[in-house]
Length: 232
Image 1 (cartoon, helix red, strand yellow):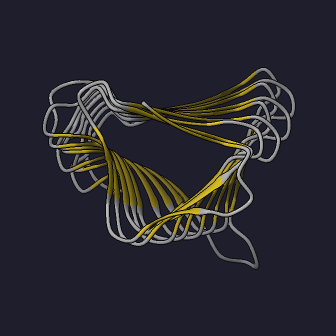
Image 2 (cartoon, rainbow, N blue to C red):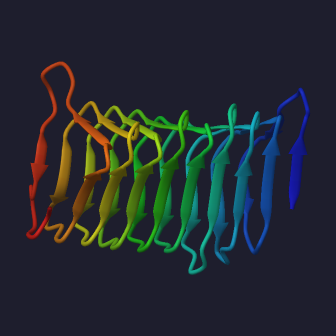
């Protein structure tokens, strides 16, 4: 394990950051900058990243589970906890059972494409609690290229803001989005698509006062079954 706490000067990694084989990085009240990519779980899996109140991580591409058979976990939790990915984020890239949890006022910002389950199954992102925000500047795809049973859960006043389109199941089956509880929000500037390019059995549920917004400035559509069948 590596603990970086309470330092004023950022910890700088010039190239890659990898946690694997039960390795864990904990950041709290400190900052880290990674010049290239981050892989939480590569080859063996069981990697971990925890960013707590005041901790900050900035990197290029990030993968939670990169070609691994074992689960990997990231948590961004507490006011001031922040993770910024300047290129793509994949939660499960040819890998299954990976989790990104953002809670208790944590913030994650992704500037490139986001995949939850890129040819991987049972991957999940949870966004929960008031003040918690997941902001994506490009498209978000829940289940891609055969990935099944991948999920996004927004609950207890969590907020997800997607400035591109959101696709639930792109050439992938049985993926889901759930937005539940008063104050919870999924906001899409672009279109929201449930089932694309022969994606079957994908679904979205909005319940208990949760809100989904689609489109801005007269753009953006809700499309259920752009491709595939039995999408809800």
